[in-house]
Image 1 (cartoon, rainbow, N blue to C red):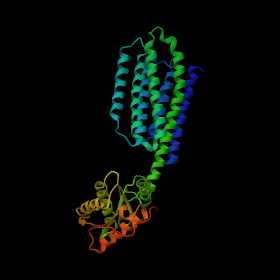
Image 2: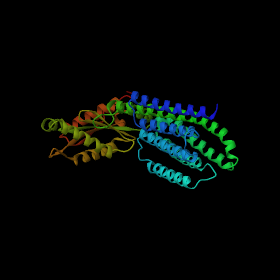
Image 3: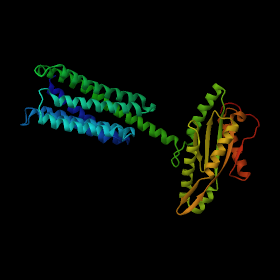
Image 4: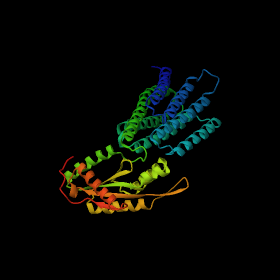
Length: 394
């Protein structure tokens, strides 16, 4: 295929992928970065089309090359923005992209004023885009997360290959002297355009795979998170607890649970409205997040009841942890519509040391301890009593 045909094919693919990404975004509801990605593709398509106009319009070739380079660099900057928006990493390396764009503008103006025997505009464009793509690939590799691993690796590898391809093109240009370069440029451009079709296909599908992975993660989060507080829900905590119990069974470890109930929340709801109750629940959830360890799991079980799973924690240590939680909640003071609101909590603690490795037993025993705390005067921590050991399992 000749160069013109390959350019047209690349342009059509850019337009096709722009449409695919926008339709996919509208279909899945994951629109983060989709407009940026479509704009990036259309900009790079425009940069290629400008080169087809060489000789067909009364504009000097260096001017067309400079314009094409500026549009291409702008397009790759938008590509970077698209991935950062998709990954929720908007500010990451954004200043670098602006600096590279400004450098491109300054370099193109200089080269138009001071012409070079080499295809300097192309050298500048390829070099700067290679740096842009390397920056984008590094962020994709670093911030995609393990949950979207395959899609991230496909996209990151495609971006890296694109950068290496441009650097190889720079090396080839520098390999030839100004007289020999025009003889090699047509064959080199054809190879570059064919590689470009493959790599841009990988990038487009990588973006769609990342979007699908992000959608899957959001659906999973909504399925296991309490919508009011952002904590785990009962179902999600049970899944984590069963995995932890299985691990303890293999390692002969221990696990504890703390059940917490807010004292007087119903009265607050009745006197100050459910909006006040919601604000209290959100504030308490924040206190629990800040109080527990990184390996602990916190869930809202429903209403004003919370449950905290404490891996590798015996009963005595769990009681001390529960006391810290109670003290932090006790110090909590909220302002709601000009009124000062305070809240107290009762907590029950159970451990596999006395309940056995059974999630059902742990929940039941900590719940029973909680209600003994309620009956004993509230705003206190009560540990489960040693009784008949629960059978291992669920």
